[in-house]
Length: 110
Length: 116
Image (cartoon, rainbow over all chains, first blue to last red; front, side, top):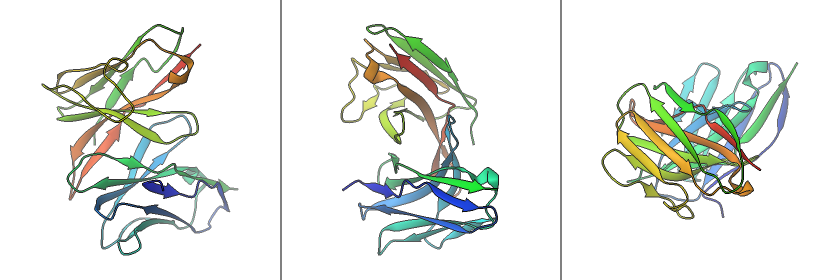
């Protein structure tokens, strides 16, 4: 089983739609969680950290479910510019190592 | 955040040659990382480079193939040695910065390497 698993997609959604991605992780000792966004032929860029209490940044909401070992990303009112690959990242307590999921591709259609 | 530059941005190399990739950051950082992203894949950590000590390599990566230098707190190099077509990939450096509640990694723009 992979340490971090994501549905590769692509998720094709119309502008204005709400879309949600999940990411599961296998190590119950995982400590920190992030969502990164990667545009085609670009480097990953931090979208948001994921806190135990959940967090929201504008149209983006991230949630953590430790019991079921998954994190989620919800995007409301999708924009064309949201089209990208969304990478789930997990770190383990006591290490600095980032473990990346394979990413979920999102295409927002006009 | 951090402003990170990499050189070269891309290169096409012949089998058997070596390429050194440079990573420069705009502020002093303790930890720098080198990743590889093969076509259609996610990122895989090659090694961690701390200033003043030997790089720490991940399973499947060795110093002879990927020697790393870290001469100061703002700069690192990764060399891809004796290249083969299987080394064709994007190589990214990243740095760790302390943020609110957690440490976060920021990535350079990457070096796109093609080996013929």
